[in-house]
Length: 382
Image (cartoon, rainbow, N blue to C red; front, side, top):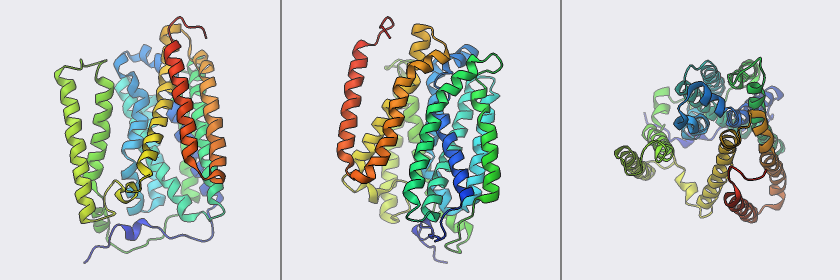
């Protein structure tokens, strides 16, 4: 039997009836949870250090979720092409549930990190399923509004994550564990809604499962995950844990370079043999504006995440402030960010020129970062 190319089932049919309210509700619940779990640990890191020690692992409490989310994006995209998306969505929510439970009952910091990583994998698949459902079932008139609301709800989850985590550690009846347990009822509701409302995708081909699985670039996905994880280990452990000139530090950076080179070569070879099969969308990257766009987006995300996770540590260890007080001092950073995201999301389709927005945003971010870096000190006035 001649195998059909990957693209034959990666482009799902477009039903005309629109997307149901129950499906929208399910997607929006998982979107809020996805945003919430990016920031819910930002202000409870000092309490986790008090409980488990190992200050060298603190960056991984926040990093593990986003790292797992990013590292498995390509895998998530592929499995939504291969399997019935309804079952993929339900299983991904269940994975998220398991990760939240594991992090909540953790007896050491390694288990917290592992639970957060499992949550990130589930969240990555949920995110891809949500985007796929809107692409498949939403009408042209529905799509802009649905995507806009989804982005807004993710932002709301991001905003409330820090304050909710702070509230749990400040309350005598709860602990930091509730920052993870609070996910469970919402994820349980999402599973129930998915079982009742979420449709499956009509099959676009009758290929056996073995042939569809063969169209997944397993090697490319594995190399992508390895490259991402090795880079994170190298960046976070070099200096605080390993001396820059030490053997472990040199070994991890060397291994990262080798794996990265292998991934690039493998993707180029895969593209020449079977275009559309590889993990990296090379045809899209060939467009001159896409790589600068991705780099700028990555830099913007890095500046936000670094500030979000390290400012609470500064207030905790340099100022001796509690979790709720840390949150109050982060609000001048978080609230303008969310308001700006909502405003830009509403204006960009009308302006239709993102270059100036990136230039203005980058200039403002760089200027404020320089000002903060030159004035921030343990005794600086608030």
